Length: 392
Image (cartoon, rainbow, N blue to C red; front, side, top):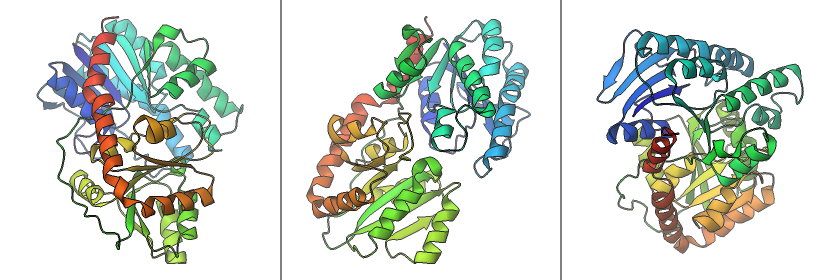
């Protein structure tokens, strides 16, 4: 089949679930065409051709460090820019399926024109539920003009998608309940998946005298409950059996630097975002991977960062809201770690102390996560789901 991918951002140099998916589709013999935003200086005047993958880049301003107003304005321009690029490079192709994730929802306006032209299956990979997430984080007023505008766009996105792939059972139930106009047969589970890499030799030696390293890697923004993590780390400042390593960048990175400058914590280190190989090396050296989400979320998020921890057989400490089913995954489905609510500082501290007191279980929990990943989150599963959807 021939797949057209519409991405807000895509790069062959960054390790993401979308790169794994694109490469797996190509390896399965499918032709992959990509129209993707970039702020990294890729040439947007010609195609980047790599085997079965052809990529046309759309130059966009950097959104990563933009404030919410500027980011919103950039989002509103993405759809028409991507459509213009598709017309320029791929308009004469015969497409079987068009795939696109959220964010952004602002591709909603170009789905009907693409459907009319290609008569292809429109497949939404639902990774973010906007604008409700912005309302939860108090970045947008509930029922205000801006909220109503984006809700209208969100509904259009759902209506003009032939299939909506939800990340988890809770994710699917939420959409079914909140968007009751969507036919049930349009919804299915489409989990975050990755390429399963060969197992690596263990690099961390068990040493009860060394502090346990808890690593948080990736975007450092408001959704990640950075304030709560800092509050918990401050409460543990005199606890010498745990240290925390943050690697990444984002809107809250400055807040972490300010905290370090003011509090001078001995148990916290912040490092800038690292290249893929270096990041994975640092993660391999850590003991525990942290997944965190704001306690204010009412939508069931399912962060893909957990997959990198499971890939390297690292136990997971999930610090999240109560709406997500990540806690179910970690505590009894995969049995790969621990959970506490991200509004419970005492619970956070007690769990950290519990973790450090029983290091003998780290290997078993990490192995459980790796086995679960192999069985449930292999990118080949995503390829199969898309192949089946293209036949609808």
